[in-house]
Image (cartoon, rainbow, N blue to C red; front, side, top):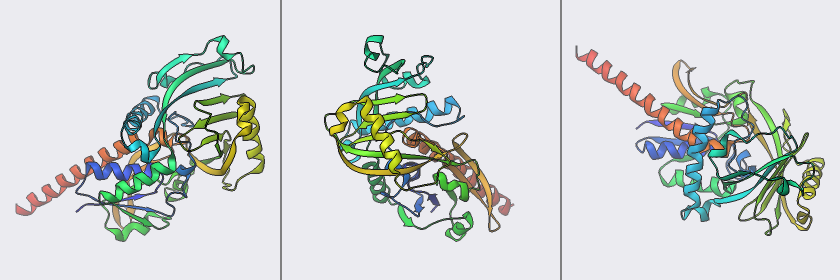
Length: 345
């Protein structure tokens, strides 16, 4: 039996593990992480489908991965899985204070996209361009729990352990290692290009909010994302900030900005404050690297650096990881066959 190790248990790691198991049921898959839900960065995510903070990642790759994910999330929203993942279709508005803003490249991937009229923009005096669309979102904690249960139900194992170097996995007899460690890849993969982009959100009870709203100002970002159990208020992006403690100044900034645009939120009841470190990088890294692990050359599939779009890209990236494993196993079988034929000669 082929043993495969996935390092990392956020949305990228767990979805990779699940997709591997689905496409390679003969494999033994182990997910190793120092933190599982509800302690991961993915738990803080708004679960909202929209490409964000992806640096120089090629547009064709973003479209490929995000389209596959949109399809997957739409399927979740239209099956009984919606109850267990909090997945639903949601409509709303995105606006910018920059009059030179153009419609995003992904406008044809969402539903009901249209540019807002000047009449629709009037109530937001500092906003100069906007559009309406329908996308899909999920509740991250619910989805992570669903992923973990699916992985275990299909025979995968979850193991809590902090991995600092690939050498620590040398005795596991793994055929392939999948590196899905987010900001942890800075150490594990020795990748200094990985930088945290600190985010903070407020979760509130505001059941009258049914549409999402995103406001992009010159020096600020505000978003209001409704879900089935709460509404997420956010809008801070601190590059290079490793602080995981809730900041009172950030909380005030988020609250003031969001209530400025939607005054009805002043009556919302605050549930919790959360902080997460988005794993930013010049571009998403999804590739195979062969490394020397205690004298053994090991294939490592890196799958990290998704910035603020982990949920948006996760299923498409998981799909690609599973196909890379197919290629690796095919190559390995060919090598084994060649060695057997040589031995017979």
